[in-house]
Image 1 (cartoon, rainbow, N blue to C red):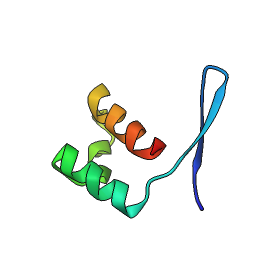
Image 2: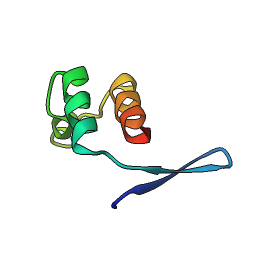
Image 3: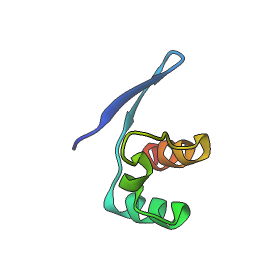
Image 4: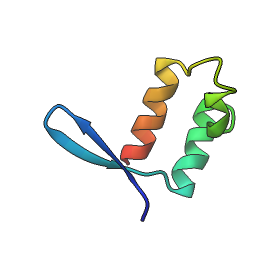
Length: 58
């Protein structure tokens, strides 16, 4: 399985998004999760990034 290593403090986490988590995230955000990164001129809100982080930790 593909994942991204994430370190917070002294703990290492493996982040990944399954199809189920992506669908849930899309419902929370009200848009496609890929669209939150936009065209590079804007950055996502902290709330949006927390949603993504929480979904990927499940």
